[in-house]
Image (tube, rainbow, N blue to C red; front, side, top):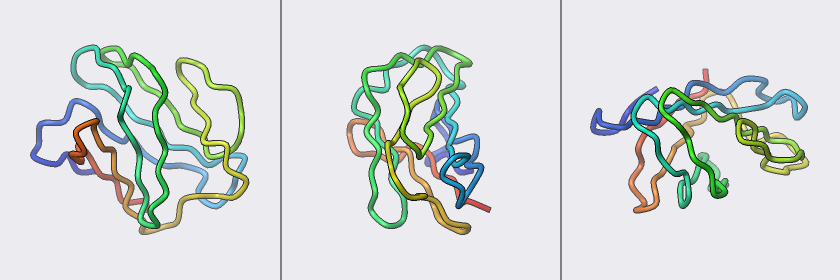
Length: 108
């Protein structure tokens, strides 16, 4: 995990279930103050992009993005993909609304 510039209040905790559509998920954690995820995105090495819906992420809060289809809640979001997205060694980026990469995570 890397916080670009060392200032990000949001970090990628990890990606688990790589290669298994039913288990594949990414979790982000807010280590700073309350914030909105409107306009934030997740990018992978192949150019796939997940757009966060209107969602508040409170201080100390976390949200999990599942690759598979499902119904969004305040703690679980769904990318609605029919195939897995992540691969070992891939770099995942969390990008803010201005287009600045706030944190990256290399999948082990």
